[in-house]
Image (cartoon, rainbow, N blue to C red; front, side, top):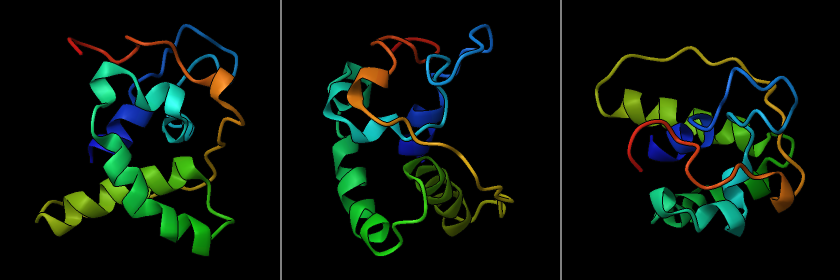
Length: 106
């Protein structure tokens, strides 16, 4: 759940351009963003999902991270979250949001 939230939580509605606006764009797969203080430990979730990404190369990291979060909620006894697919991944670490973009204290 945390991986999906941290990937999506950088969204800034006041920025029109992709990927600068952040959001669910798969940027958490890059070390540059994994090193952000708020993202400590998320590399472990990424390692769990990488074999799935390797097997299903057509799915974007952005969609995979959100699917993992929705599945975790459902498996924990929460509601089934309807999924829509088609998120676009950033292409490189230079497109990762800057440290501190998550809302609230990080």
